[in-house]
Image 1 (cartoon, rainbow, N blue to C red):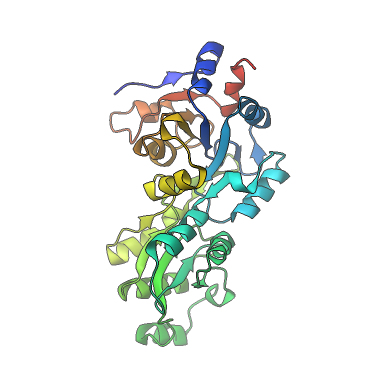
Image 2: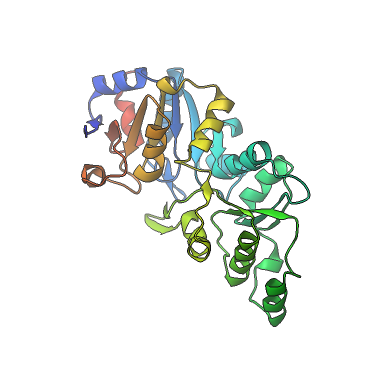
Length: 306
């Protein structure tokens, strides 16, 4: 398998690389920032790409924030952006449920394992839901819960879908409800299946860890709606009317970002070394994906001439 071209420090190669594309799909965590730490030169790099007439789309698997919330994070971190440039897995999931899955009433309610970002995006698509940030689910099990969940009296008969995202308050009560809905035939969806995410120069359990107990209990695999799911790529293509051959995916993870670009038949993929994966990962014989290009950090693209 061909190894990626290293661009850092090669101005001519960087110029040629940027010239190949009209659109850059850019991951956020591990590429632009880690936690609340913005990597050096990010703002200037984005300005460079835009000054060359390139379209920038921020594609994130973070489901805890809706697009307006994410845009506020960009602003707080000093990164210019527009809410329409942001495409997250919560938004992708809401679009899939409302426009593709199209569950028939009355069994069209969604049970959410996740945070407010999912809820906000579901509301924008007029999708009914329960669970999520509801405090009634953020507590310990009671004897009444055991009985009511077992006999179904505490379950909503209109739930036809379980959507699992990153949930900072996941507990036994939430998982018990989700399991019973799945046993009763609910569609199993996941905002994404990232095992970890970068934060504060370390890694923490990702959205993929939330669904693992349900997978183990039911034997079902969820339909994933974040990277590398091509359902997300199709939605991005539809929204931005991009030419895949003139589009490059930029990210730090081989199993999500780079795989997303390769399986989506994009014109190129660029790996950065500021996040999860490194050179040894794609040089391994069992590498899940190999990027076409790589740089130490996204800001290395400033090596291009203006």
